[in-house]
Image (cartoon, rainbow, N blue to C red; front, side):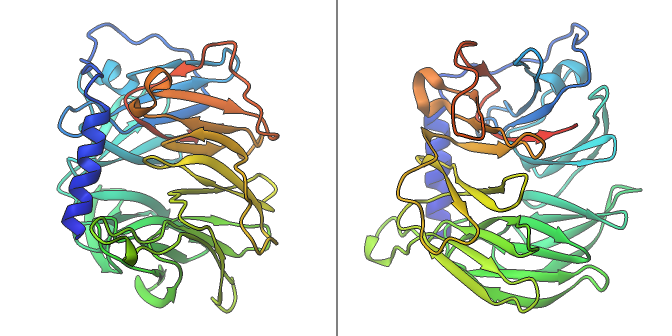
Length: 357
């Protein structure tokens, strides 16, 4: 079943992106003015090496594309899953081909490439080390950031996905992203680099957020059996108590969100995004029931929340036809802000935004 779902997702990705042309790196010097406000990670499509980086400039409400390729004269690879900002460097987590591209955030010149990783997903940093979730080995790989060498592997649950660092504790969402079923969060003590607690949450946990009280929230997509719908389970939003690790669930029905963010005040949460997922929902951290209507009623493959302004950016993939590969900006009331600019076109399959300022 794991292989079946993975193949289905790859087919959906490839089918939705066949109309996009493969971008070639430019030999001309790149021309852009720093500082910029947000880095957009463009996932690309499987087998086409169209993963790329875009920059969003707030003042001009404009997007510059193919930044890494234009600077370095080469593309990044197939699937850019996420990135991590560490001081003046950007660590770009390449699910395929299993690498991390390290680039200067001032010039986007490549500084190093960490290779031979097993389907890496997300990264957190603690005490000079990078901790990367890795599907292939069901582990967190530990990287010495001074040498860019893998020095250790910490076994966790099946297909670890999203990560959240609180103090010296690393929360790991064991997602079963390859098609199985899992409902656990591993808590790793980074002082000893061992799993000290395994918490049961909803099925298929994906991504975390922390609220104003210091409690941890995880979005759980629910289990989908592509052959037998009777085995499907609802998605849920789960709160993990910061002290006791007790879990409280809010049932989300058959909605299948993959991403979760808090607002700047940390008293509200936004969830949504993914293949075929319509709507971004807003929920108060004190709520016991899911909202019945979306805060923003559009299909998005990914989204993010500006933690300075509270503005929301939604990103579409090629399956949205005339709105393919766009970046949409909304204010804190959920009102579209960049309609007059005809929206901003990013790269192939934008999946996330990371704010530099």
